[in-house]
Every structure is written in C-alpha cells, then in structure tokens.
Amino acid sequence: MSSPADRALVDAVASGAPAPHVRWLGVQEYEPTWRAMQRFTDTRTPETADELWLLEHPPVFTLGMNADPAHVLAAGDIPVMRIDRGGQVTYHGPGQLLAYVLVDLRRARLGVRDLVTALERAVIGYAADLGITAECRRDAPGVYVEGRKLASVGIRVRRGASYHGIALNVCNDLGPFERINPCGFPGLQMTRLADLAAVAAVGLAAEGLLPHLLRRLYGPGPAGRAGED
Image (cartoon, rainbow, N blue to C red; front, side):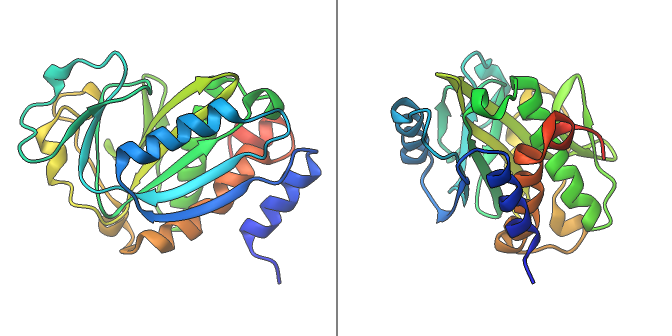
C-alpha cells in the first residue's frame, strides 16, 4: 500500500513537473546550508526538479534582510546571522524541523503569497492529524495554536524560484525564544508539538508533515495547493 507521501508524489508527476527530490539531511550547520540553497537556486534550469530539504540546525538566531537587530534582546552564547529571507528574527535549534522548499514558482504557478499559504496550510493539516486545532494569521505569517506560535515562515525568491521555508517546533528548547522578540513581536509566546501531542522526534514530524507539503505544493490546481481544507 502506498504512503501519503508516495501518493502526493504521484500527484506531482501527474501535474507535468519533474517529481521533487526530498532530502532528509539530519543536523546541518546553518551557513553552509544557506549557501547551498543559494547555489542551487542560482544554477537551476527550467528542467531542474524542485527539492525539499528536511533538517535541523544547531542553535542560531537569524535576522531577515531588513530585520531590526533591536529584536535580539540577549543572544548570549547563541550566534546571530543576518540572512537573505524576509521577516524579522527567529531561532533555530535541535528538535526543530526545518522544511526548506526549493521550488520553481513559475512552473508551479505559485505566487509568493500562495507559497506562504501552502506552507502554513501544510502545517495546519498535519496538526489536525494530531488532533490539534491550528490557524494562520493574515497580519503575522506562521501557524498558531491558541495564540502561541507553532511554526514560522520565511522565504526568499530569486530567479523565479524559492528557498528557505518553514520551521516547525517539535521538541526543541523554547527558552532561546525568550532572548528575542520572535518574528518582531514582543512577548509572543511559542509552543511545540511535544507539549501539544506528545510528538517528541523530529523524524516522526518530518514523516507526518511531508505528505501535506507535497499535496499543498503539487496538488491539482491552486485550490488544491493552497486553499482551505
């Protein structure tokens, strides 16, 4: 019997695009991964298959291109990097699942807002599988559960293609978020799957989220990719 991810890959092929490559990369340092995404995007061609990278990072705070460094309150021993995505400051660390989406947006017929919505809806769908009611907010991208942020979104588009993606709190230490104004919002509280549904392994979260990502990005038509459930 095929898995949900297998069925979603069949949908991707049926859409006429090359099947996306899914890569589980384990724990990777932030800067080499970021540079690899840039290289992939700069050298891809119209025939290049999309890639979805699933991974974790060692502790790091990242600031978006136009982020205000004042939102880093007390970095302490955690490095701070200014990078080329949108948005303000966030934290990455072990136990958090990163899903980086290297997608040809022209071929996928997705706009930037469509992509953000697809990522948010993928997490909302996975959360529903776990019995969690989650939502997105138009004024503050990401996924929230009872006002607490479960997942953060930040992307960059270059040459008609995306990189960066979504960060889902699984079983990571939430303490470092207290050293920043998460996503530029003072006092914003964070949450994680380990406290909501006893999901305590990033690998399990990756397996659960992947079919939702594939369906939202490659399902038939814009409504299938980014519409309401």
